[in-house]
Image (cartoon, rainbow, N blue to C red):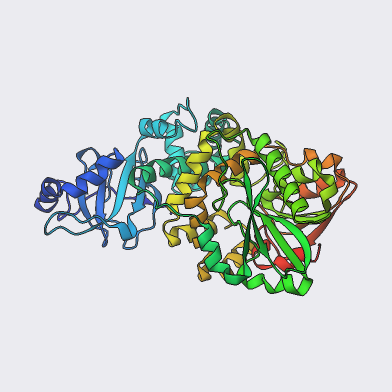
Length: 501
């Protein structure tokens, strides 16, 4: 994604050429695309040829894009403008009669525009011209050293600029800046271009995916609310509770179901509020701590109604928040806690590559960013290819996780699952981000149940050292390292978790 695009135009597509002038005069549909976005830019056809250009952007836009141009951020030749390219994909807009279909839209973002578009995340961010050029270069995928070399400046000069930027944004490093800025800018673009999603529930997707193996229960847990419970495994198996990860409300994957029969485990998965049709009554969403406490009480009520005694409780990644609350509030219902790929404990001194952790300070101060984050991802993932690239980019530093994705992404299930969840359970994911701002480890100090942390030895999102430190603080806890495993091992090695049950 890291390239600097040349600004010069060829003879045929120059800003004053008859071909482009005619397109600008006649192609009303092209103009409407940029009018919806309300940013200067240009429109390209499938072959990458410029077919419409806004006069304010003519000096910055390249004459051509690569065929099958990857969407994302680039820098223009001047370096003073960031170029955001969006692939319209299957929703190609036709031009006027005799004009080709629009495939790409390229938008020019200068410093004032950048500061305006990220104001929802950083309300008072003000960058110098040099600082913005650095942000634009980092968004395009260049390293700090590469940026310094291209600008003819020392690495230390660029490092000082980066420290100034992160200080102004209230973040800890380069990765946080590029991720959050990229999400904020892309959210703006997709918000202007996206079409409304049809009304339905993603529970249909899971029923279709798992077939008869998935049993769905709706349990009345109070005077107003209901709790939806997914069930997998043999009905006469040993009951075990699972708090699902943020983006995969049902686990294990279909190919891992045999492990439940092998281990004789009846898996009960309480669906958290606003996921998979589990909407709660009332228009007001309670504070995150209240929401987590209510979920714990509702789950305990469900276990009592099912006639179940103390059960083992598995949590994957940020399911840890909900599992810890259950164990603290109703310890008589929990026989053992199994934390798979537990998130990094909230410690400002612990380095983490998790985007969710980078978001925490912002979510605490501006909860609306959670909704924007979810809306952004739902729109990005209308393209399975973009979903695949998003996963590969997020976990690119972990060879173990990229290997897991290499096995699973070709099946397409992960991409479809996440797209369905973000599209139809967006409020649930937004509430999840709010809950993630809570300190999930503080509840464990008062829990007497045995705890097993099943953790990949190559997990870079939640470093093993941080989990080891947590385990040493909890006398009833032990660490079970999974060899050659990253954070995503729970997706295709679920049996490894069942061994701890």
